[in-house]
Image (tube, rainbow, N blue to C red):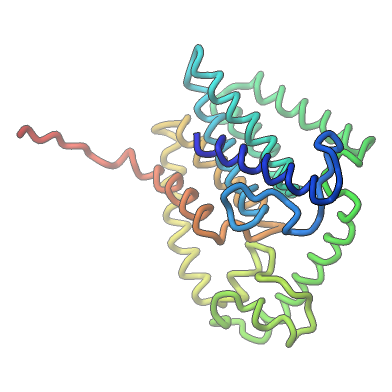
Length: 276
C-alpha cells in the first residue's frame, strides 16, 4: 500500500519536472540529472528503484499463493510500481527484475510462467534493440557506461593503496581527487565499494556473516520452497543491481533486504503459547 502511495508521489514529481522543462505529460520524457528524476519517498531515484525491485518481488511471491479478487490488488501494485520505476529513470533496475522473475517461477515449479517470462524478456530485448529510444535516458547511456568504468578504475587504485583495512565509510567521496577520478559518493559497485571502504579484513568478516545466513536460506529450500523463492529473488536483485550501483547501502533498502533474508531462519523458531 505504501509503495502505491510512493508511486503517486513519483507521478506528481514527474509531472512537476516535465512542467518545469516545458514538456507535456504525454511526451514521456525522462531527464538525466539526478534532481530531474522522480524519487518517491527515497533519497534519490536509484534508491527508489531498488525499493521498487523488492516490492515487485514481494508482489509476484504473493500472486503465487493468493486467489480471486486479492490478485487484483497485487496486479495494481505491480502496475503502479512499474510506472514509478519508469518515472525514476533508473535503467539498471530493469535487468535484475527480468532475471529474478524467471528464477522465482522456476523455483516454484511454474514452468509455464517461467517460459512466459523468458519469452517476454526476449521480446523486450528485441524491441529495445530495434527501438532504442524506448529506453529512458538512452542518449546518455554510452557516457554513463564510460563514467562507471572511470569510477571503478579510481576505486581499484584506492584498494591498491589501502588493501587490508580500507579508509572507512564513503572513502571514494573523500579520496577521488587523490586518484584523479570523477566525483560521486561511492564506487557504484557492490563488489568494489566494501573493499575500498573496509578493506579485505573487514569485508572478509562481513562475508563470513553473510555466508552463514545464505546457507540457512538454502536450507529453507527443502522446508518452504515458496518462501525460499522470495529470499532468492531478493538476493538476485542485490547481486545483479550491485554490478552497476551500490543502492543496497541505504537505510530503506538494506533494512528491507535483511528483514527478508532473516526469514531463512524463521522455520527454526518455535512458537510457544502461554495461557493467561
